[in-house]
Length: 121
Image (tube, rainbow, N blue to C red; front, side, top):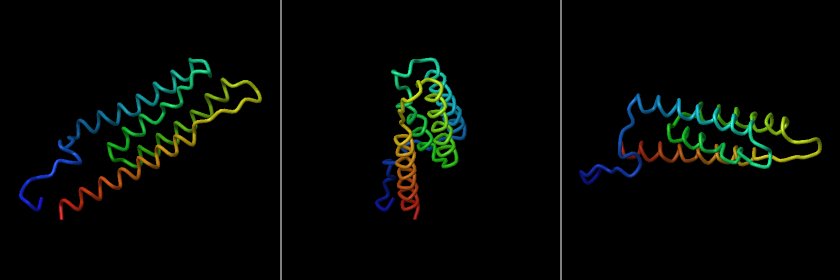
């Protein structure tokens, strides 16, 4: 805020505690719903490709523990669901995409925090 005009490029609305709590619950509920849908659908419908959506939501919340916890749980769920659904000899995995999404989300969180701290100085 050098010119006297407040920049609203990163977060135009300051998140309240209630909205952050809702986002936590929504990210976890979305991850659980995705795993349940993945369990009940055939292996040909690769639901695990959308496991990154709760990871992106966790990155917007800005909590590393939630981000990496969801990433670990969804990676484990990927292997468990595939082990239950894939016949012997078939291998398929989107775990690399989950790790990449979590890593990029973490980088995005660092950039946003750095940008916010520079504005405050």
